[in-house]
Image (cartoon, rainbow, N blue to C red):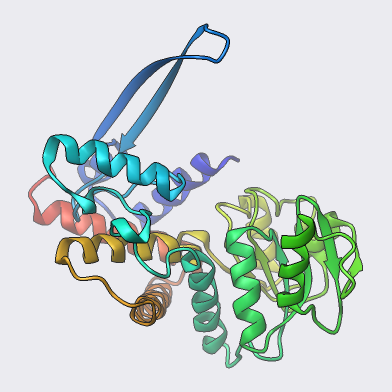
Length: 337
């Protein structure tokens, strides 16, 4: 089952839990706006090529719609500049901008930092903390490297790391700062002197307390879910666990912190950037991080409270909380017809 199908299935389950009216359910399923654009550009060889793009704006019942385009800050600066040509200087129109053009401090580390704050909230619920626990991290790009760095700083023991270049392990814990320097210098994880090489395919089933998939979707499936040794899975990637694996892991007693919440640190700090642009008052990095921790911690407790009241797992708790908020806003704005 692909990510879209899984999301639709979770939406329908949330709608059943909430007992949504069929008219509200239909209004939430249908996007507010779908935009198709076409761009024709000359190639280096002189020929023309046309590209077709689509943008779906799903729902604005709770305010401006936040998209998921992931461009370099200089590309984001271009979007700001083009929009401002026609509407006047409008820094809040796009986030992820360079700091000098209204971007937010703390944005680069935000997703990985949010993963760590979410992990802390979950572990606290179980009477545990990051310090002393073992972690395996799949993916060592922006999200995975920042999560690993912060876990290392907080006393967690990162025992295995992988990315597209390979994988390394050390049962005594990897010195993440040294690994980052090695990766920067060589462009790969292989040949790192502070750990042993391992098969990247074995990382997901490596012996650890906490598994954090930060790379591709669908990596946990029915073929490998039964071999997962972690007690907690933090979904830093989008849709890393397919529904069949979800069921297998649940029966094993593994607690899964869902992606819709766990990797929300980036979009949350993008929201902070929008807020700062609207206010015309920029925050220092300490405030950004403090607010991110507050939001992530509060969100976890909101999800957990809904799980208890509706007797559901964290994934359905997160979906149900989100759907309920949008449904309530839709009703209050009189859109149910």
